[in-house]
Length: 60
Image (cartoon, rainbow, N blue to C red; front, side, top):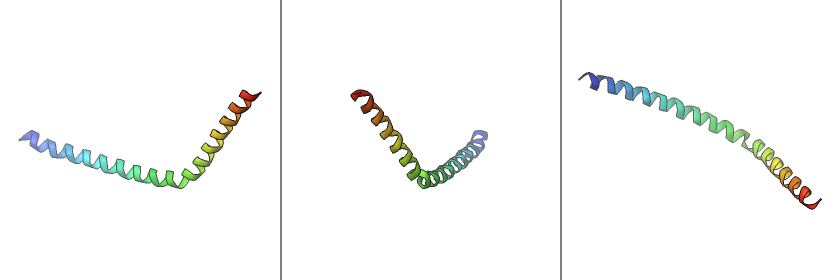
């Protein structure tokens, strides 16, 4: 009987934690979507720079 009373509370806590995590992830996703273009441009520049350096060091 006691464990039955404790279990739903634990479940509710888990559910609330899950909701908070999902909400946080959702906000994080929106922020990342907004800044993803900038990051992808940075990544592309870094990747190209790295490749160019690799080609440069191989040729010379």
